[in-house]
Image (cartoon, rainbow, N blue to C red; front, side, top):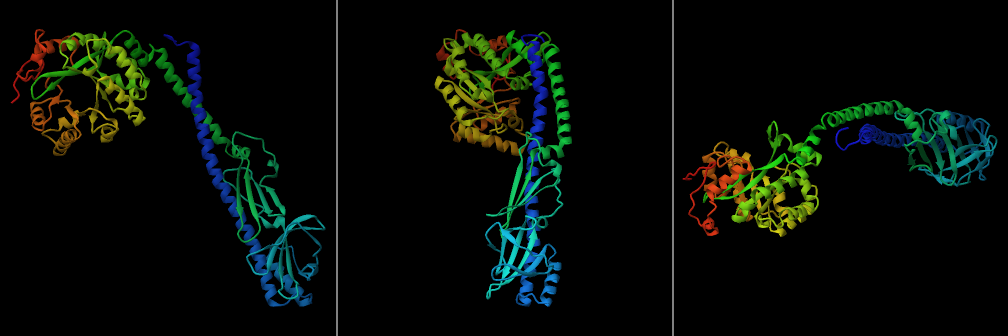
Length: 545
């Protein structure tokens, strides 16, 4: 690799460029998968609970219906009635007549045997009906006992539901190959535990955690839990992760290729900018700022140009890349230093002149720019009171409070701060209210509309009034015609810059202009006098009517 970057650095950057999209895509896929799986798991727990409640509802309704027809007895007619009830209940293994001591006296199919209670009896939604977890003594299988007892005599009917019959045997999930279903009774322990895929009972751990959802019945003492192992999610969506990794690698390779092309082919445009700063190729051009009432030169704005062997490159071709790469910061310091050296003698002789510089949003993230200004201009002929710094709005300020502190520190040095391109940038008028600037600059797009667009002219008038109300100096940028100049003067605008006066000039031309307007023998008193003829156009004198 050229310059100071070694092959190890290039390899590290290339690896990072490949790994970043792979990691990002996997994280995004995992996050979306977890969200979808959690929604699916919640839906499954509610669906299973609804099925369990529906099956218990049919049994409860059957018991209540049997009890309403006749008192509990073991007469043949009642046995037949119990058989019919058991058939209609569907999910009950048997329906028995119980005595006051809860012992079965007879049953629909003659299979009622002793039960061991696993939980207290809990009331159900129907009167005189209770539900409890039991164990069938003969098989030791868990079950639910649904019991109806007569108000008088203590006898009643009891239906036994095997735990296997409570929940559906087949359930489907759209996001997981496997999940665990549990049905429990408070104080009675686990009734049923069933994996969708018995072969996946023990899934290995993965980077995706297991998901769970609990649904609690309001009608019965039952809780349904659905647990989806992370490994099951990965297994069911393995193809998506494969494609995500392939796509991430391809994107990363593309980024690495672009990086290699930029880095190895002549160092790339960012390297060219850095080398240009080091070689002093970035230099300020100075656009005059004119008092359009008196016609006096009151200062200039330093605008960076890139002077290379093949010509001068305009800022639109390198400023965005310089901002994105961070090279704008050393570039700004280079422009300030060069401007100090170019204009020091002139500004020392004419202390009323003002020198403006553009700062980007990143300059207001910390106080480094304040220290840099002090370092560059302390002890120079250019006074701090002659400096003005413009807040450009190509990028939004990240922290308004911090930016306000930086602006305040610049003002404490004696410099003024202007808000550039008012009405067109990110912050708009809110920056005027929050930043505490001294000057607002009217963007060229509004000046261009003078005499052509009624609504834009109304905006110009509003900006003029806003500046007056807020006691801010207003500078009109991009003034190119005498019609615009006349309109702005009529509206009370006093300061302007633009091609109607002069384009941005190299240092030698600007010094010639300043000497023409303020000869070397001119004293401070002469500068302050108001008898100078108004100035319009580069190096020529003209009256503004």
